[in-house]
Image (cartoon, rainbow, N blue to C red):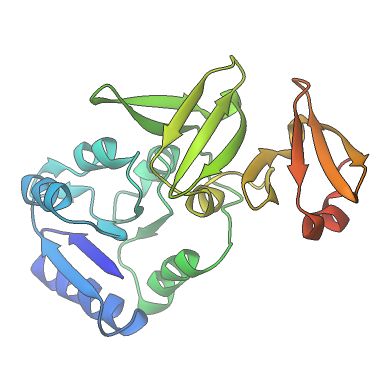
Length: 231
């Protein structure tokens, strides 16, 4: 686990480092930056799995970092006293928001999301961000038809017929999206709000017909679970 902590208060940064080291394997790489610029430089030069980010860095705005990394493959957990910014942060697709002051139990809950299929049920994720021609393009969740796995990337299929490539894997996106999104196949993630019906095909194969007329494959292991959810 490669963890980057961007926190300007040395005492809190060391506490986060200590808690992360005790939760993850001892071979984890945990690095600390105390400013927006240092954090951005580190992200540009190193691969990370998790970002722990404060929103107030000696008067600098942590959202400057968040806005630039929302399409990256790693997860972000906000650790901040600015709880009024939580909704906005979740709209950017962060994994969790840990309010200051925090304890080991609360931070551990956030860490556990990295190793589980837990989804958020109460935070309004409004968009996903993709890199496009050197800039960040925001894709509204309501514009998504479904997401198809493409190796370490994911292919977003939109209502307007367009497709966009996202740097996060299908597994990572599944942790961020609302609970209406279901993994119906190892390579497909779709909102059941768009489901029309399940089609039983020859050869014991199953498909999910969605509202635009496309038929998506259903994994055999998922069929029993889905048939009770799709009317």
